[in-house]
Image (tube, rainbow, N blue to C red; front, side, top):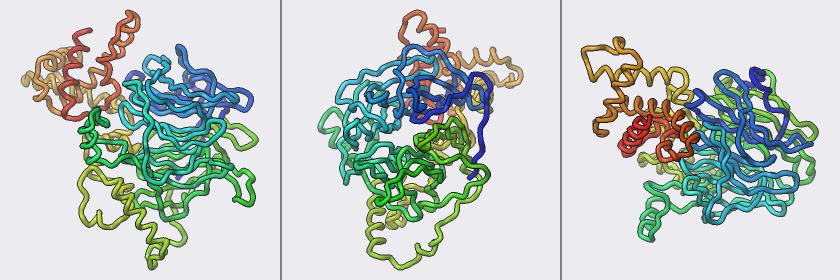
Length: 536
């Protein structure tokens, strides 16, 4: 792995030094690229509420004007669904927050979500993560009196919040931990717990994803889905290799072939509780399914905690800010996870040694974990019988060849192997434009794609999409249709806002990538497209 310092002052000033802030990556077709959205935090003197945005491809910093929004706060958490960023909790001074805020990055508008059901109490240093296109998982935190290990699922479409009854042995309550998505499970690492103890444990939460609709409205459908997937449960992971020491306020992200832990605050052990700030990089290698040591190259950032670590591109993480007990940082660093080699543990031959009693227990835990985290696709009987934690490994069949790409997205990988950015980025836009030309050309074979102007091709393709049976659309037809839908939708949203109209029903596909489409959804997309184009 290689660190490299990032320095850019193009446009507005970048975010000032801070810790406890939130950073989110948004793939935006409206703004033609990848947005890295910075919000809030504290610089030890005041709590902040500013919003600073980096356009990743151009390096342009902006400070968009927004309407409404949360009060200044730090130690809140955020996650992304489509082109919206959702923020939860945090602290301003001694005051804890419990609101859920939505930031629409297309229009730069804030919205306070008023959810029904039992909502999470006010807290700081919790973490949250998007489960799918409508649900957010909220876990743990500190409410000013106690550390928590409760789990909530917030449906941002239905504006409903539900506490989750989780089975299995419970992780210790904690704050300052981090969540990461892997396959259809959520990993949790580290955190601070009662009596200021720093945790270095790794847990997996499974059972939140079900085929078809969410947990049913009737007992019969609920029972049917229970047969498809066990109830949510925690499983403590036991991986070989040198695991990182206990810590909180660290970074923990899915970087494709690796899970990366960086920094955080810990102590020197239970006899010496002096605070220690880390700058090490620990890695879960998903090929060998074990912790490995990382060998950095070049200049490195200094030790810190409560920074942000964000995946901004394939194999590239962005580090910003943090605190080392004395100073607050405002520096930015890139970590190239594909550069350099990872060093295996010194006792590499230990894997071949005779199994001990502790190893047997570990193998049993791995077997249970492997069963709970079984892949969606059938696995060979031999692989199922090994009892290993190979569910963490890369799956070539589902991650490299699948057009749907849902699994790739949940693992933090590019949705398509050939595309490291959003659908409208770089060559992807050109590819979509070429597909529109192809759609127009096949309607009149006499004229080739080069004989059609862009306007004429678009008009011909739209006429075709308005009349064709959706069942007859090819894959390229659907990709071209979705591209044109996203291209015209921002104008309609702006017009709807000026006229006070509600077009929320026809904007749902704005957050969906072509590689995430299911065959069953093509008909609805086609009907929505016709409504959108008809309004123009």
